[in-house]
Image (cartoon, rainbow, N blue to C red; front, side):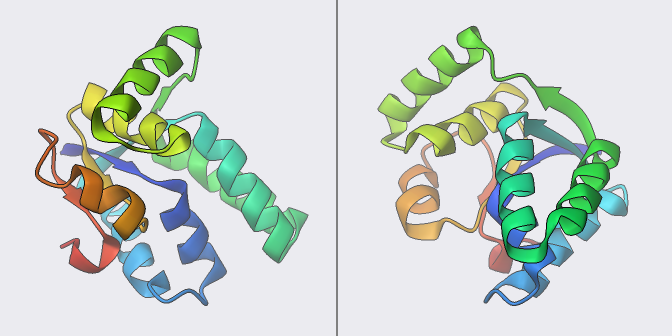
Length: 141
């Protein structure tokens, strides 16, 4: 099994179901459920996912997805001062936004496959420049 880090936007699009790549996002998450990967997430993922799903689909949907994340994630990367400092330098090196840098740092630290919906402002900045596999859900197989 390989490690994988999935950006919160993939969980959100999968759960909302009405996004352009919702079905592709579900396929990425299903690969974890099928045991092809083990999931590594920064703890900030909880905030992003719960906030967005609760806002758009209601508190019960947020609680359900929170519970699903607790069961799916194998390793939580704590966003403490040392980790966030390192992510800041990673962001400066690759020209990524702050929150994107936290996901990238998580994937790099664990040599994980990384999947994000953020193609132009994130994926294209790092593709071929980092020593890990990076994918948009539409390209994930």
